[in-house]
Length: 379
Ligand code: AMP
Image 1 (cartoon, rainbow, N blue to C red):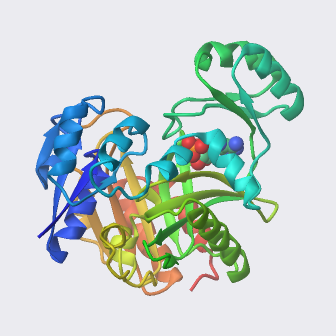
Image 2: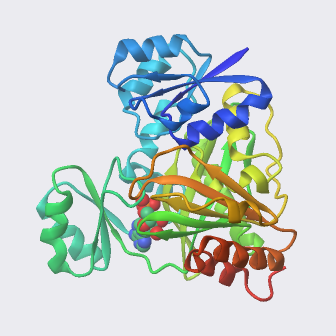
């Protein structure tokens, strides 16, 4: 019997455990919060990431360790890695935790990014603004997610307010991109270097939080290949093992790398029902050194996130091609509490089903951009 330990016990750990169960894999989850929702489906160890003895005991109780949460302190990852194999490796995690390090890596590997500058002082911010201009976004280098730790500057006169909001920790200023669209590569790499990507996913955010995803993105094949090649170079450079997401802005038809998430990713949730093998199952396979499953599309799919509180499931469950995911979390503003996936044999059918889903949820605005992207000619 094989047991995977997961640092972080949120919905990603929960979906990993659910995907691994049919393969006969056991899980054990560590989280600081006794209510962590993965604890509903796998044994939960409640401990602080600074509690070295607890981390050491956790490492000894499992065969391999992975993450549901990229902001695990580097020291905690290293404590565990000294005792048991850890995938992705702590070095890869360290790069992905730091916006400056990851953008620098993207550039070194030939993936352009929005222009950026490190900001460690108010003077740095003035220099960075002189170079990059506005609109721009000031972001914390670490610990930012779902739009947290970001301040948008519309003009140079916003500099003081931005500094007051975020100053005091390492920051990065980047140009605000008027992108045509946002896409993500969800990819997986094994210990032997087998690399696979799921069809390119298009994403829509609201208030910095993912709102909806669509796969496959309607981009032409050459464009998708460019994105996959960039993801592959990143994975190879980091000797990455497991699933990761590479988030990309598309501006004037050009790819600009935004960030990478060193874990299974919200924009890959559609793969549970929409792909031959889900991101969760392939992550389990990769960290165990097992062969990967096919990442091929089963049907065009869309995913809608539920943030704050869950709507009523019943009207959604009644729809053809719809699937419901309740993470078992209590409602809270800005918190991801569940998602729905819907798939259909063709893009045209998917647009039709999405319209019905939007009606069932009373959320036409959330499905609208996805339906538009599918377009009248989709199919
Ligand atoms: P991030 O945490 O960097 O993924 O940012 C969350 C979301 O904010 C992104 O998915 C974009 O929708 C938006 N965003 C972040 N950075 C930029 C940027 N430089 N230009 C335009 N939009 C951005």
